[in-house]
Image (cartoon, rainbow, N blue to C red; front, side, top):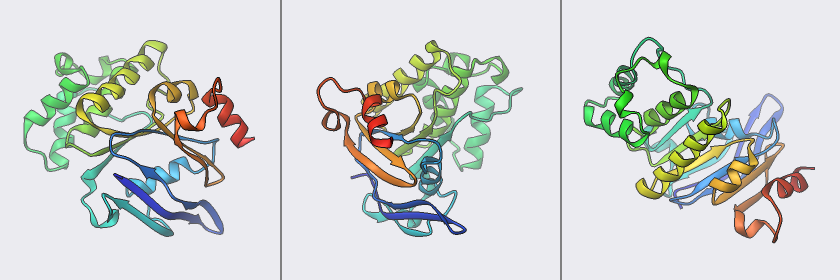
Length: 231
């Protein structure tokens, strides 16, 4: 296992936003994190990335407690990536690299190659489509060789062409580069076509977790399964 949580919980005041979550992510997974609004997806992502601390429970990365690990093991792209619009893609990644202590320009070039933006590296970000900005956000997330990349609604606001580009990019990074992903999304058809495993949350608890092919009955769609579990 790459990442596991043990009885993970987060309380805000008297309300438990997440409670008793035992999440399992295997190396090489593309795991879909699903649930209705308010199910706890964003809270879990914020705990995994270190933005907030759990109220209880543990996060283990390669069987070591995550709070004792360097932050670069896990990277996240939360919804719409923010960039300096009047700077180029290269300049934006250069700023991020400097803040992250990365001095090797080859790592910037490599990440831009992987997301298909190297030829547009000197173009200002304001000229990019929304799909290109999402790919640039992924380039930023993978630049320092993170072992786990978390994407929160990576296709939000994209047209069908942009959705396909992001889907194909994630699949390519997974198969060719061996990257592990957690993807939070409301697009169940996309999750079913892209992910090998899913976790379904409701009211801060896990309702179901496992390989998609083992959770679904013959002829059943992930949408049908999700509705049945959360109704």
